[in-house]
Length: 91
Image (cartoon, rainbow, N blue to C red):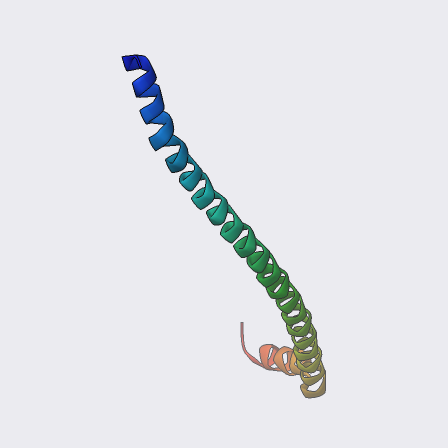
């Protein structure tokens, strides 16, 4: 055998199995990442659904509070009382 053939044989004997092992590891990592992507996508969807429900509830509560405040304002007639107080004070 010539030196070139010896080097080629050595490289094939050493590199080919190493490259296959590296490829197998990369494939395993890709599989894990794909599985994690699916889990994260499901979690994101769940979070978005929960956040949308919370927003809806918070908005309804906000509107309820505003309506109650308006009702209280009307029942106590704050506008009229303030006008009377302001009219009593000298300018």
